[in-house]
Amino acid sequence: MIKIENLSFHYKKKAALFNNLTLEVDNGHIVGLLGKNGAGKSTLLNLISGLNHPQKGNIMVNGYNPVERNPNLLAEIYFVPEEFSFPHVSINTYIRAYDSFYSSFDYEKLKGILKEFELNGSANLNKLSHGQRKKFLIAFALASNCKILILDEPTNGLDIPSKSQFRKILVSSVTDEQLVMISTHQVKDIDTIIDKVVVLENGNIIYNEATNDITRKLYFDTVSSLSEVDCLLYHENCPTGHKIIRTAANTEESGIDLELLFNAVINKSI
Image 1: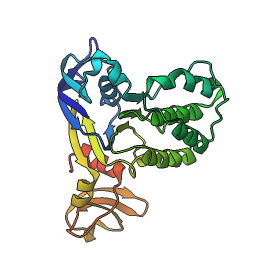
Image 2: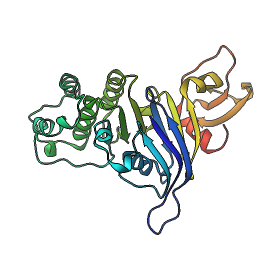
Image 3: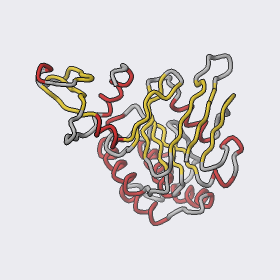
Image 4: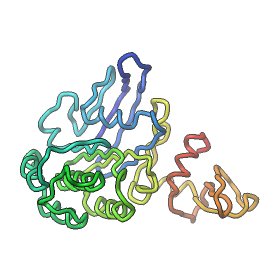
């Protein structure tokens, strides 16, 4: 569980990035954290992980203050940053060096994910492509079985087949005891796997909805003409006409166009 109350944070000699931000997310969810460039998504993930310290407010992660770097919390949280580096060692050597930090580490799960990602344990990490190294880091994170998994732009650097593999592996690997928070600009890469949408704007959470509630309230569609649409909330032009969001009728349900939803939220149409 992540609980943030009245969080304020700013970098030295810069304006406040967050001011009294509040957010609470329970375990058992895969959360999509969305926002424009500079909205503070990566900074918020660093704060949750204890890598940055807030000036004011409280952050509790599974009952611990991440700033204190309690070993019990460090064994329960895994952060996959957008930018990362590895020592000049093989995959197998890295696993042997770091697996003991995570008491629930699952070697069989890791073996299966590495096979799915077509990664050889004898390969030197720093001789792999960026995308291959990203896949290994994701695989290690999932095999750690940490209760809190934080992924910052996890699909950056992955090719199209790898993105599909990522979605399948993530959904099949996490349990109801875990909380996964994914920050990304590549919203189409995660729109089928998240069950909660959180949008960050101007230092505040401006949208926080479960996907079940979104599809109950909103209907996403593509139409040739807007004249045929009742209860229209938002629309964008597309090659076949218009992508729209309208109020859903009682018996209707559609998939979520996460990019369209984000634009509607940012434009205050929802």
